[in-house]
Length: 373
Ligand SMILES: Cc1ncc(COP(=O)(O)O)c(C=O)c1O
Image (cartoon, rainbow, N blue to C red; front, side, top):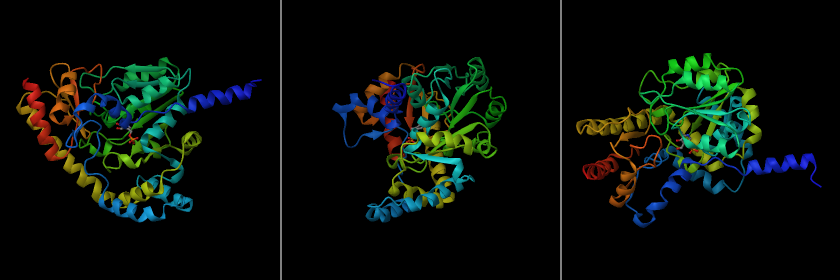
């Protein structure tokens, strides 16, 4: 006989099988058609990875960790959490780690949406949290972008108010648009969060921002507001395959996320992250400057050819191809460059990751060939 408790446990098991898709899964799904044209020389500009890979100090630390990875090293983790939290002037009880930020985004969506409490986001935004909420049977409310492609924080707040609360997902800078919300707008949103509303700010790309008007939402976490910030080591730190991310929030919120955490991260990845963080004051500005230079050169090249684009704030750019971008998505890989997937309703836009200078030279050649027809 199925008792009430047994039934609830089964429901929980069913829910546990639902996982948030990662950028890797989206890239893989949209690259299925590339099987015939796949070559080892393909320039991959499709999933916003960092071609620099992990910093040299992390590689050294991970090489040292490999031979001793036969043990769990549980006694080291308190110190690891202290370093990760301390890198952002937080305490260990204000963070929870995950396999990339995908895991912490998943736990936040699971914990702070329900059958009556929707996920609220702009469209298009990073698909992961939206698709996860739908898979979990949670309602989703999508709001329109402003003319300049940034999130309209007033519409997001209004949607939360109309639903009597919910989880607002704000990806800043936003994937796929690379547009960023000014900190004055985020200030307004935090000050005007409706009742029963949590704000989840996904800062996967925050390190690439150059504008002084755009800032991290971490100060709100330090002030104890109803704000969760998701961070990843996949982007500026170039560790996408190592799978480390964290959520930062006040301890009461972290306590709600912890039970949904899948597991600890691998000691090899954790040692790599700690080494990178210990050297972050050198690594982050150097890498940001390198990306910004390559990004600026691409923008200049596009402007000279009167090709429109959305002003980028991340390590990718949305280019207005002037026609359905699917034409580029299918033609470019045959010429050796894989751009991003389609992002409806922005059907004419092509998302392109900023790669190395050599990769961007190849991109320009191939893009122009397809553009000119
Ligand atoms: C906006 C955004 N958030 C989160 C992620 C998840 O990345 P990861 O799980 O590697 O941290 C991605 C991946 O590209 C992303 O674009």
